[in-house]
Length: 257
Image 1 (cartoon, rainbow, N blue to C red):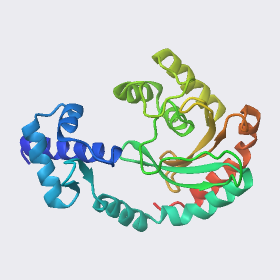
Image 2: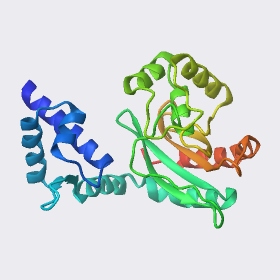
Image 3: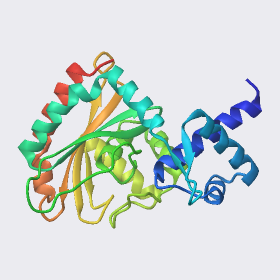
């Protein structure tokens, strides 16, 4: 494959990822600006995505948005994996037990992606989450747990390559390399990730990693429990560690390879 073809493929994928993050639609100028592409090249790539059925342009607004074909591919893959079928009953039980929001993420292609959730809160203030998006690594309990499983320099490089700015950024988020290294070491020492208003104001969470069934050194995903900070203080977060570990261990025994 030529360098030009490879570059075009990479640009198409970048456009798709951007459209998924802004599913209400973007103008072509916004797409070109965000991806630092010429307008002519952006138009050509968008037309290719439209012909393939992965994007569409609204006739009235002119905005470009993704189609459900992308989601259909993901659902087909998940159906083959059967990860959600295996995990959902365990997530539901953990949510009922803790009375808070439980989330599952998977590691895929060098990224961590939210996959499914279970809501345990039945009244009062409830947390919710965005599924199908990349997990910010330095501001979430899941992300920090994953970073702590890597060699420190590799983990730091992953965060620095994206920058400390994140779509989910709370008042206690780390903003320096020194602070990041300290968080990674703390997380590694305690054996799980904590999020104390680092991804969102008023949100606290705890997360543990899921290791591969036949390859324990491989990280295949993570499970977290999160709730409003006024209700889920550090003491209550730590009380979730036992039930969370039990669910993670069960998932490791049945996780599809």
